[in-house]
Amino acid sequence: MAGTKTLTIIKPGAVANEYIGPILAKINANGFHIAAMKLIMLTRKMAEKFYSVHNDKPFFDGLINFMTSGPVVVAILEKENAVEEYRNLIGNTDPSKAREGTLRRLFAQSIEKNAVHGSDSDENAVKECDFFFALSERFSKFE
Ligand code: IDP
Ligand code: MG
Image: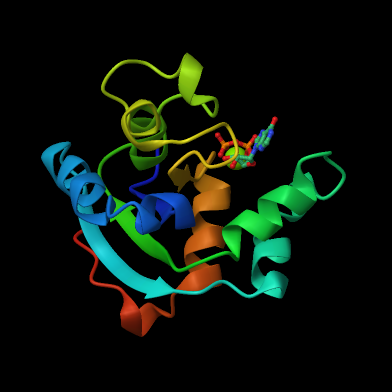
């Protein structure tokens, strides 16, 4: 059975452009429950660990610089089939390829500064939620 939670990050570019409100409105309008949320600055160590699967990619250093360039919103979102549903809402990694109406199409600046993160599997969603939130910081509809 598909999982019910995913981890999102509203990235520094979208926070700087005052898109926190518009992005959260779309998240709620699409039936997601916000189970945990905070506005924080990622340290380099945190960003490097979070994106460690990409540490051999040519875009890694730029990505870490970007993700630590300003505050981000980190949140646990809940819905049936959350990972797939949220990946559908955010759209393609490259905003120029993202469907009309998706968060990246609406709010991204570039393939790097692409507005939001969304977990890519239930397994990674669990790891990413644990990376940012203690159980006492979560207000789940499902658990
Ligand atoms: P995803 O966020 O859609 O899952 P990933 O391939 O996991 O995409 O890449 C992680 C993040 O790295 C992207 O969201 C984006 O910010 C950045 N990124 C991915 N590919 C490129 C690229 O070709 N150039 C610059 N940045 C990239
Ligand atoms: Mg990814």
